Each structure stands twice: as structure tokens, then as C-alpha cells.
Amino acid sequence: MNIIIFGPPGAGKGTQAKYLVKKLNSFQVSTGDMLREEIKRDTEIGKKIINNMNDGKFVDDQIVNKLLENIIFDPTKKDKLIFDGYPRTTNQIKNLENLLTKSNQKIKHIFFLNVNKDAIIKRIEKRKILEKRSDDDDQIILKRYDTYMKNTKPVLDYYSKNENYHELNGAMEIADISIKIDEIIGV
Ligand code: AMP
Image 1 (cartoon, helix red, strand yellow):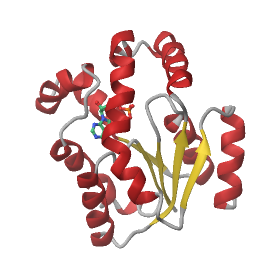
Image 2: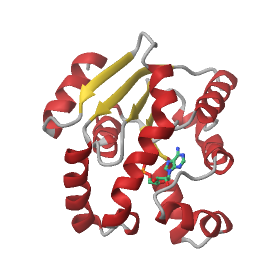
Image 3: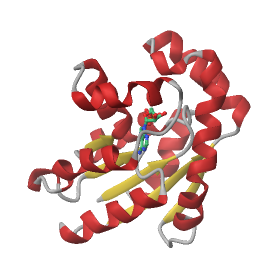
């Protein structure tokens, strides 16, 4: 089954996505990881996006949308996709729906990990120490959160009307969130 996990930076999307990948033998689609990889490999895309990434701003829809195509049309990954951090804009929703229709796939569940700003700041600071991520500098933490909330509001409005939409309290313990997810997807 294909699943979307979304929520602000530090809400635990990646952690839950990895949990589901293991559990369902599926594939994580993390646009954040893909973009960081482009920067690490110093590709043309990497050069274009480094400033936005480091400033806590979104990367252009066109660039992010393009990254997705190979994965969606890969027959070995069909109906085994866990989207982590995509879609983040209404343009990305349209692109995803278009690609899913073309590849004859559907989204089975949509999870929104809701967590407030204070908890996010604490978590990101902790992660910064563990993962040494350059986009987690103190001064841009709030910017990343605000960018996310501002841009993702229409995405939330859209998906919250879907019958397979589930909002979870992202401030809960990681293991408890996983249990809730398991209950909902029935595994
Ligand atoms: P994440 O690891 O999902 O928190 O993403 C880290 C950063 O990558 C974000 O702050 C954005 O700069 C960029 N990014 C990741 N996914 C997207 C997306 N779907 N659309 C635009 N920018 C993205």
C-alpha cells in the first residue's frame, strides 16, 4: 500500500516512514534525503538548491517533482511507496496525482503528524547534535517551521477532507505513534 506521512520539520515523519518501510517491506520516498544527496554529490541540481535548503525555504516544485518520476514508474516499487515530506504544495499534489494515475496506483492512507512549535524546536535541536545537519542551524529552525506551516496549509486542507486522512499527535512517544499507525492500517 502507498502511504503519505506529512507534518512539520522534526515531527518524526522520517522515523515513522522508516518504521513502515521495514514493516511493510516497502520504499521510503524522502524528497529531503534526495535533495541532500544532490548537494552532497555536488550535482547541477545540488548547486541550484543549496541556498534554499540552507535558508529553510522550499525547493522549486519543478525540481522536486522531477525527482519523483523514476521512483513512481519503477515496477519493483509499485504500491510500496511511503512518502515522507512530499507533497508539500498544491502543485506537488497535482503532480503526484497525475503520476499515480498514469502508473495505476492509489494512496491508501494519509497521516498528518501534528506537533506544536515548542516541541519541534526541542526535537530539531536534539537531532542537530545527532545528525549534524547543516539546515538545522538554530536561526533557521523557526523559519523552516513557518515555511512549512504557511505553504503546507493548503495541502492539509486538501487531504483532511480525504476519507483516508488520519491526524496523529506527533508529540507522543515514537513507539506509541507507530502503534497507532499499525492500528489504522491494520497490520
Ligand atoms: P525534510 O528532510 O523533509 O525536512 O526536508 C528538508 C528540506 O528539503 C526542506 O526544508 C526543503 O528545503 C527541502 N524539501 C524537502 N522536500 C521538499 C518538497 N517536497 N518540496 C520543497 N522542498 C522540499
